[in-house]
Image (cartoon, rainbow, N blue to C red; front, side, top):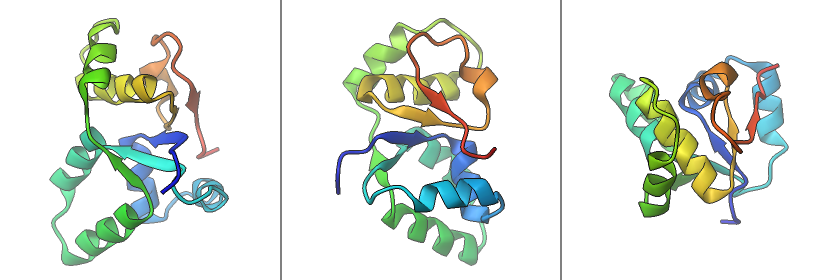
Length: 125
């Protein structure tokens, strides 16, 4: 796989699994193979909600098309430098994007607006 450029937030992954947001689906189709990544943090959030066999199959198919990134020491260091807020999982995902030099793709821009130097795009519009 090529180097990833974009980190998909959990809400974006869920939209993609549901196929429910046409502009997002179209934008993802234009990306080169290997350019999209998912944090292990988002994966954990999504796994928590998977119950039905068809949802499990959809998740496994989705994971074949994206790079699953482990949360590493560089991400932990970036997290330690972020302003404190209650949304810790969002902060962990943002830290991973910062550490990897990735643009975070999310539909919740406000949740990340106070994080310096974080590049954010909303592909659902």
